[in-house]
Image (cartoon, rainbow, N blue to C red; front, top):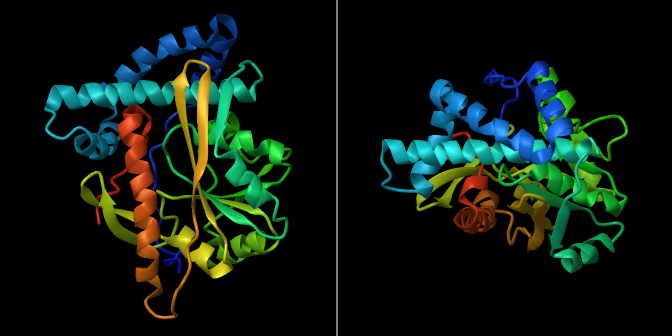
Length: 302
């Protein structure tokens, strides 16, 4: 069940403004992806040197993905992480503005098609801050079904305008976890009507965390998505994406879980295996794409 939503919200540091996004937009139009990417080296260095919060947020992941690296090497890893994230944000804007053509390969299409063929049965798309999850969601547009994304509305106007996730004409709709009962009732209705519900698997959004093994340490992932899936008898499709080259991405929907309760007791404990499986999938991902894991918060802090 969701935790008390009346608790004070932790305010996140706002990064990005209209001038900055406008500057990258102009560079993208004038010089293409290469020109916009070139700007990232200076911008990423600025964040590395002056944004202590961002550096410490990335360090929780870096020191576990690259154990034993010293101060300078860890900062180099963080710098590469910042550059990689910047490239993917630019790609996202290029696709939205119609100024970029990308080759997007979909892995697991047969499995996804089988679920879509069951018109009266919904499913959960479990995403995380790895790869370009925004681009991954845009590939689902051809399914001709709205995707209901459970997330808090972006409170930075510049970022909200640039991402344009929940625009009026968008096929992506937002369910806020700040709503009644954490948005669970609305989420259940989506699944019961055969809809698609997308949930961030690395953000609590009011749900409790559960300790599982991730990168050889105990990390705390929310189990809310699996609880909703088990209660509604819905499958969970893990949605991943990775940038393979300048204009090529792969979107992976081949990992599908079926959370179920075997008995009415210890429901939380029964979900642990599914949470662990999700963490395992993410761990395999980070081994292959270490600089596309954008977990800028401490999952390992209880």
